[in-house]
View 1: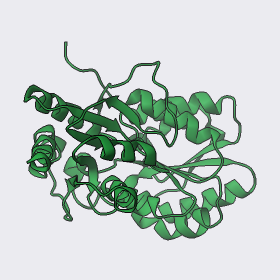
View 2: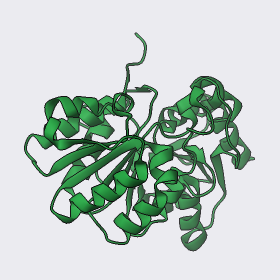
View 3: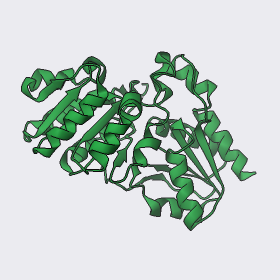
Length: 311
């Protein structure tokens, strides 16, 4: 039997609907992409708590900020590239600086968007959002993690960025999975090399671990679902117990998970680091699998990066 793949956009909105049944403050704002973000399901259940703004992401963020000032918990839902790039000024000025309780949900993250091409590939969203003071940044890897992260984001007070995907992803965790915000997850110990992954790249890192362990290497694997605040302790422990760290992300290597990890190590425990991600370029338009192959976002590329650090 093959892997079970699920759409984490559906996991997100199903969880948000469940939470909203007991929390009348939650409202959803859309920019004419509700079928793509799956928020149309929320509109069907709570038509009076769903606000369609049209193709106007900047206005949507401003509207959400206004709603937050009068006690609502607005979820701004749109493509990750538009949430982070087109509306960045509004996110920075109206949400981050005021510390308002606005949740930005960017779907279609990374180059896994595929055929929509470079205009729609969000390769800088994590970088932009994690530089904003007071923002939390979460990038779940599968269905269970998305459900837990959504419930957490809805519960806490303050601005958050939740990064979701268009493509279906393998089921990694079961229903008993415990999501602890700001804490990385050690999936396997190891003494040779550490693989640190987030989002869709976690399953690729798991594949790389299998490749490397079959070659006789001892691999430590860490899942980082919370990019900010990042788990400093788990990174430092990995640096102290293995010979190098490979970071894995569907994002530019500039400013994302890899940069966050490197910043910690440079300050606290210098060690050898390799970053698997988009190498300071825009990706072409192609299927997700073709793009991941071309730009080295796959298990084989991660394994190669690990070998290079070890030799």
